[in-house]
Length: 340
Image 1 (cartoon, one colour):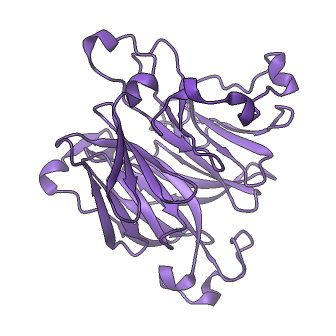
Image 2 (cartoon, rainbow, N blue to C red):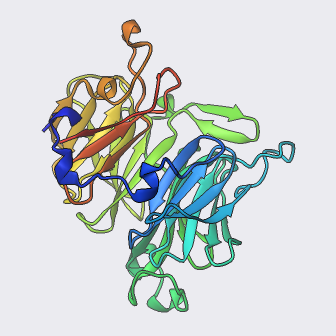
């Protein structure tokens, strides 16, 4: 544990290029790619970019199947560009995609027509993450029949909900069929550390929520990561079940997180360049990877002693690998580093 990518046997990962990749026929946007997601059957890749474009690709041959421009509208009606799209997820049946953007909305698009089907509106600032989650009806406070007729729910007994998190400091739970708001959840961040910044027409809290990770154990819970010195294990009703904090330093903010496939370990990147590994169930700090940001970036400013901020973490679904990456502008190039 804690070893960088130089110690990983990539032959065992089966990372050979697909035929079109060998010819440098790559999937590309005209501007920076901000988010990606793979469909549940592993055949489609969804990507989003800073100019408001959403693309859906066939992984096997790299073919562009759908392109949705200005998926989240223009910026204040002035620019021809769309608002940046910061997150994307496929529906459980792969027929729809969910996106969130800098226009403070989350939207659902049908892949058959590329048309917007629903809009989830209510956040006061950028939407940083969005996801579908199938919950027992009792968890969201509805009866089993209220979601009847929902063709893309996960199973016959589940209620399809949409979860969004925003720079306004809140997590919102929505009815995935009707787009009606069900609940607003605000982690108990200390008021003194949660200043409000007015950014044009948005309200950006200094403790913006960057990441929400849904868990299968404990059931019906999620990890909520605001930009502060603590991470929360919460129920979908908004109850705080556990608080994860560091015991080696104070005043360092957490940035992004991921959870291993077994739901045993929580990996959280901090703004001091370290990655803290928690036991999900006990809250105990199991390990601190001290050179994490340095090894996950190609910063031109390493001589200054300032680490690049980690933008995101990802965990391999079947193997014990964690990937970290940064979009810090001080980098010579973007890299993805794997750890085991």
